[in-house]
Image 1 (cartoon, rainbow, N blue to C red):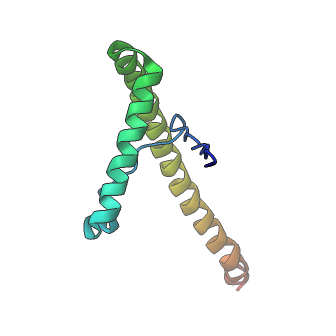
Image 2 (spheres, rainbow, N blue to C red):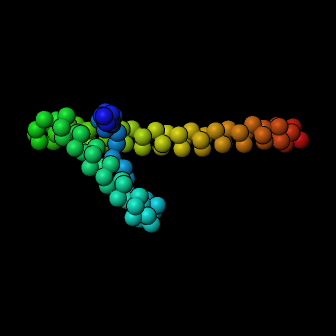
Image 3 (cartoon, rainbow, N blue to C red):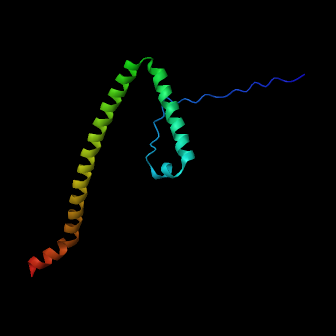
Length: 109
């Protein structure tokens, strides 16, 4: 008698995964890697479509995600500009601190 093998193949959850960006150089140089990324992107897109239920819900979800992404990108830009300004202020404050003794000596002489 043959034993019947019950193979349980675990299903991957693609709901929390993001699409893979295939514009990188490593994807252009490797057709196998590019094919794998394309298949993974299709699985992720199919999972997102299945969760949405209809195309209108999916389009609404895409629109809200795009708006959130746009807001986050603007916030990042503002923070980067603020960091740049603060880095410049820190640089000049350190220069002032280093040269303060020379300035005091110059004024005394």
